[in-house]
Amino acid sequence: MSETGNVPQIIQIVTEGWGAFFCIIAAIVVGETAWHDRKKVIGLLRFIVADGLLLLADALATGVQGQGDEGAFYIVKISNLLAYLLGYLVIAFGVSYFGEMVEERVHVSIRNWKLIEYIVAGVGICLILINVFFPFLYDFDSSNQLRRLPWNSLISFSYMLGVILIMVLLLNFFKDLTGLERFAILSALVLPVAAFVLRYVGYDGSLIGPPGLAAVVFTSVSYMIDYTAVIANREREREKWIADEKIRLLYNQIKPHFIYNALTGVYYGMDEDLPRSKKALKDLSGYLRGSLDVLDERECVDFSKELGTVRCYLDVETFRFDDQIHVDIDAQDMDFQVPAFCIQTLVENAVRHGIRKKNPPEGCVSIHTCYEDGEHTVTIVDDGIGFDPEEMMAAEGVHIGLRNTKKRLALMCDGSMEIESKPGEGTKVTLRIPDVKEQ
Image (cartoon, rainbow, N blue to C red):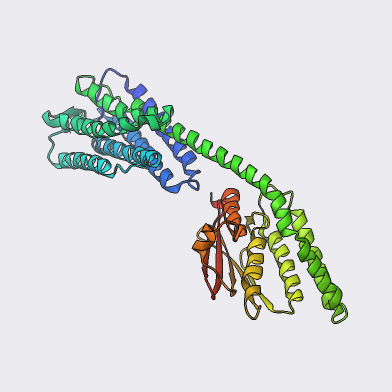
């Protein structure tokens, strides 16, 4: 792709070198946001990395061309080959990324258009590979300089064909994109082609550096602005949700009738088993203290602290109902955080709406935690009456604690909640919380 021309080689090498360096920085910055939308980030990273390698290959070819030793000959040949191939990949990856952006915004499938683009890129790549063995697009003279052959125009034609096809489609959706996204699309698709057009009409200097750099800059900045807006909106929603939930959580977790019933059980139990009644009173105190301590927490709390409050609650319930409730806790993983009252709400739901509604009203609640594949997993299982999860999510006012807990998990720690339940068999709730150390 590189030839000796009017543009000083040192300027071209420096420009493309800095472009490749920027691609590395952009890839690192974008990669750090993979937790937000892994599929979108992977698509953008493919485009950035391919463009960075393209700039690096072209800079290397420019710096070594014209040198007569055998090593330089192979470096120039391989670098130019990679630059041509990566040129097609940059356009294909750019089309893929922006195509998915359009599909997300307007909810219209452009799969067939992307397929046509991939075919054009595939044909171009095949032509370049054939040229390696049977030169008809470009070759190298005795001084190790690239020279275009009569069929070289096929390269420019295939580049322009692919871009024109996708631009015809994207122009229909420009109104659905932001201004910076429009610049990103234009720079990613039009500027590289403009460089090839100028070269085709007679300008011999390499113009791949500035268009490639502009494409990455606009695309990366556009993505980061969009990412920042999403995070800001999410934080506002999270703050509003936390504020609205405080009073509800206080009422739901520090229930007057629960305290009254627990104290009544302790009062009458003192005549039968004083040591156990004193322990129950201590557990009730621990439950109240743990619940009140986290009411002012705006962030997540340590799981160990949450589990301590849950243990106290379960011990009080076990005392109240004469050991009809059995508890099995296997906490292999404790080094993570959860929204306050998150586990407590799920355990209380298992006791009140699951086990205590059985006939006879007895059963087991188990809590298991583990760490696997970058996620902290909490599993809460009961053998209560169970329910239909689909009906639960659709019904208003029923199991609202489960729905709110699911939303709090997503807003406060990017967690998820899965519910498996069958009437008459019990319920299993699984929480998955990404490890902040892996993000």
